[in-house]
Length: 451
Image (cartoon, rainbow, N blue to C red; front, side, top):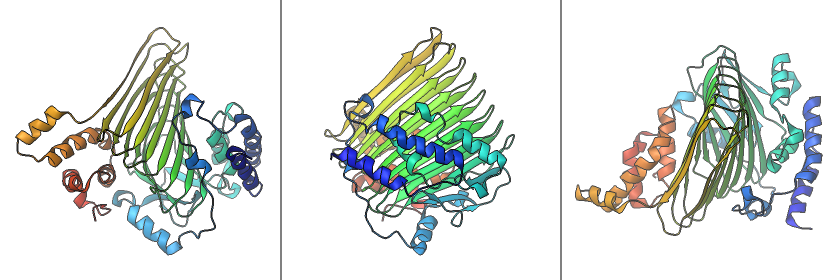
């Protein structure tokens, strides 16, 4: 039996132990299991997966290693929670929503385990039924389907209509053992609501994470979602975001990929009704022989919609990265405005990026643009800074800092910005680290990585 079939057999065996007391969830889990045979495990002949190293997934073996103790988990939470979000904290451990470890009390945001009938009133149940694995019959993502089959526990976050959340909400996903972890989150922004979320992924040791977020913004809703991935450098991380935007809604998503041996982000955003807008940004920093993959698809399904994409990559040593971006404009989606840009900075001649910005336009009255750049630090800029008294290391540090900071500054809370700056620059050589730490103000941040 080949590895792909063995992987599927493991999924089937694991699914037999899982059940839900909600009928529609159980039905969708069974349908997803049936669909796996039709979807098949992806391979390098598929354009979206041609650069991915599948052994990072197929060679992974669950082990009987013990998870961290509750005391050790509490210590991790204390280490990674931001001061500004300590009173609005949601925690999951190995994919399971832990209400007992969370610290959350809000009159306008509701959090519940969506796979437990006793935690859902009629409205929450209706939202869950609308969001969870919707459109499963047409689902084409293999790993999202696997998540639907194996998901046992997850949370629904509902932002009440006509409400505004002044404080940012932090979601902390912790992986603690050598497992294939399924993380599932549902986010529903009610009409004319607004909220700011910052989601962190961390872990200890070797593990495989498969995370799926499904979100919907109702008419007039505004949602900002910052995702900071700092998984263990022994881990493999799969992440998929699916967002549906209704009339006049505005969605900002900022993705930061700093950890994991191998990571892949699949970002799919549907602008379904007029005047919806999306801003999608990303920063990926990889060194040694680590790999980072981003697939971004913005679907303009209605007229008078807008989207902007800006992704930046910082690569060192033998690192590899991939950016595969698509702006897809439907036939009736006239008067749309869309931009896409991918910039990459190589700090080593051995680093490599595959960048493929793409347009698929079926409408004839649109404004679309895309572009990509790949290069090393400009020698003239380095010379200019050195001529002003800086060392070569300091000059490199300043230029690298400037390249990354445009994306990092999109994080609203100071602790989050310092944390992201810290992670972005800790991969560089030790002589550069001290300079970058000083520039970013990381010495003020309690989670310093410069020991």
